[in-house]
Length: 403
Image 1 (cartoon, rainbow, N blue to C red):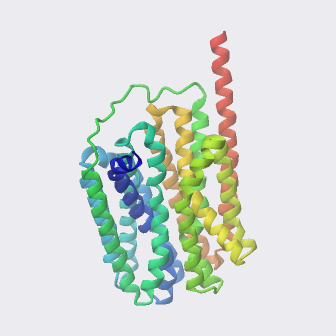
Image 2 (tube, rainbow, N blue to C red; image 1 turned 60 degrees about the vertical axis):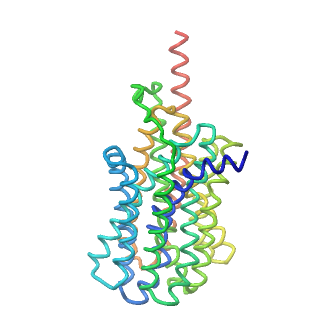
Image 3 (cartoon, one colour; image 1 turned 45 degrees about the horizontal axis):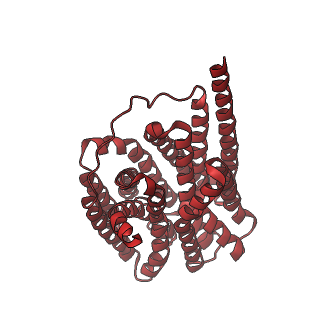
């Protein structure tokens, strides 16, 4: 029975995992261990190199806004195929030194395509999965993020021993392979009927809207919270603190292991504590992990920070989605999850550019980790206030029924 179930779920898993692998795991995370080499080989100086990382975040915001529109107007295979092609080209066409504008444009394109894959790929996978198995498949789908970070941690340092050019080309080819596997998965998905609107998407319990927007605000603050680790962590360790590429690559590998384990850890946490308590624990753990390197760069501290931040990236995504569904119900979930994703992407883009701009006068990444940790603490407060707003709306609704 388990083998038969695995066979039935394989197309959905291929679709979702390959989409998240390329969408964030390669399109964004693979650039992080590339950044020190880009700077050392004088393709760009430190400040423009950081801005190139932020270009991907801006593209992710644009892609998050466009993904639903594209998926409604074009066949899923075409949307997914075009997205994989764009990400592959963004690496292959940056394999030679060029102008800042050229690299910026392709990093922007990779962000747009990555966001489209992150929205469309998992949605297709879950829509084709029976309701009783969606929690399991949903957890597996987001392991692609960690798998991409893990692959980049081991492949990028090894390829850099040959040349920076070979590294860009290899990452592009890896996207091509992932894209082909994803297309195979999409082609084998069972046909599902599109669920029509119930006409109740805008009907929330009176007052619950405040709880929803507080939760979305917390999710946006989470986007600010992980920017330093996903953009600057390797460069912070390798170059600023002179620990070297190998030590930094090890930490990026631990980050990838964390991201791979995160969905499973969060699934157990949500099962035991619930979505609300799980979110509070996840935000608090991430806040502590982001701030830890400012106070200690011992190997244990680095490793704990890498693992926890890596684990909480896909973990908070899953917890926020689950908590949102509990607040608004399944019929309205897609609408509000889309708004949460757009808010996350916007905050991520603004934070990426603001922190890149701050780095230039500061000349150090340390304060950026402190700022991000403070934003995550603020996220804990918003999650708590969301619960208060939910309780008040529930009491108000009860009072109205009794009267």
